[in-house]
Image (cartoon, rainbow, N blue to C red):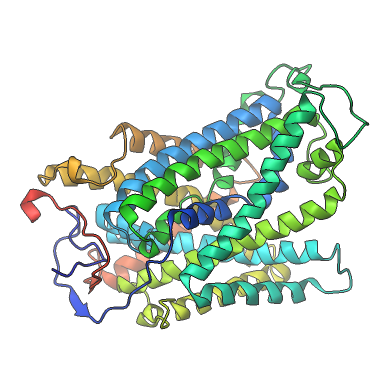
Length: 498
């Protein structure tokens, strides 16, 4: 029997409606586990690590920063565990809002999709601008806006060719960043114990003397660690891109769990390892205040042209994040249109399975965001950035809540959890704990004057999305469109629904 990729057979789905059969519009399943891992790393590893990690150490102290990143990695593990069960059971493109719509409510799915789309659209403008500024190190006579257009054209072309070309490009983009981080960990780790073969200026072993500060292990107190933890949650955003790409993955039941495990492990090693090295070598009072901590460490161990090397790596990181973000934006619009909650034009695919209209609109709005950062930085752009920051945690909360309600309804409907190809461990502890930790971070934002704007604009945006959905589509939404795809695995249904 043909199988539907829109997951209308979910046991906890909305009251059953009659779906309309339409001709197949197939996104190509062309990506392997290695592509998924690098797409996730591409979305996570960006300027936040290469530029802002020193600031994190400065705010929380050496040990406090490590603790904050360990907590962040733990929360990522919880969220990815929940995402894994949903993504394997229902491997559809732009999956987050599909899960939330079926497991929680259609209005929640609608809101989740627009939050996530806006998050990455705003990021596009920021990535292009930052990359253009860094290019002036080598080409001071070329205006920043010229580089913005050049990079926008490159990323649009890479995304428009095919999903595999995108995945392959992102693989190499991310590999450059990973190599830079591994080099920092290896060379910096050697320097910690007194081995600096590239430099004779620091012959002694620093060991971990920086961790013994005059003010104790946590010189800025627990408050500094807590506020840093909030920023770390945002630093890890992008790991959920595996779920967005689920609909274009070969053999989802095998590749998605493999990619999730690899991503969490690599993020733990890369982030915590690099933070530990930086904290051990650079005094926390000076870390990241004047330059990238990566540049400081590379110069410490004697790497020639450290500034130019890291300038290249950071530009690559920015383009990699923008590449993943544009991919995500296009799939979200495509998925919304498939659900009947966005113009049908967004479902138009090229012969190679690329949602070209959704891709074009996302890029156009990203460039509008870029313009607003110049001409309306204190009004329009401030609102966009605030909502985008709020969106990260809100989307993660919707993922873990969707898994909780999905599993509960599946079991109540007579389903056997042994039939699930991937199961979230320690249910219901994992989704509940993740939701509580994320909820605490949302509340804590109110006490940080640098982040409280996220609540001022984020909460009204969420309310506006719900109100618009109920006004436009009603509480049940519109009947989803069944898209037949022989390649998509069927979601396991409870006995009573088979």
